[in-house]
Length: 82
Image 1 (cartoon, rainbow, N blue to C red):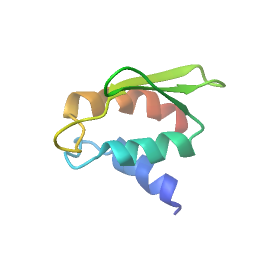
Image 2: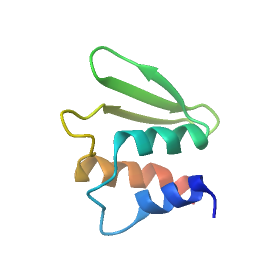
Image 3: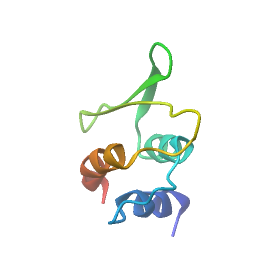
Image 4: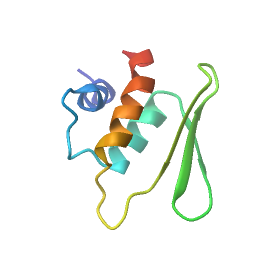
């Protein structure tokens, strides 16, 4: 199993894991073909042109872990790549 497949599996796990980081999300989305555009402050958007998908978030701080509600939202988008 590739690193991308392992990360995708981690993000699609139910119940949602509480140890998923922004760096893991960044790596996964780039591997899936998303492009990143940074906004003001810590805002970040990821675009997938072919599938017309957008993931909008912020870089979490001071802790690197993503919040549970955001991961649930991302799960709905990532199911397309399953």
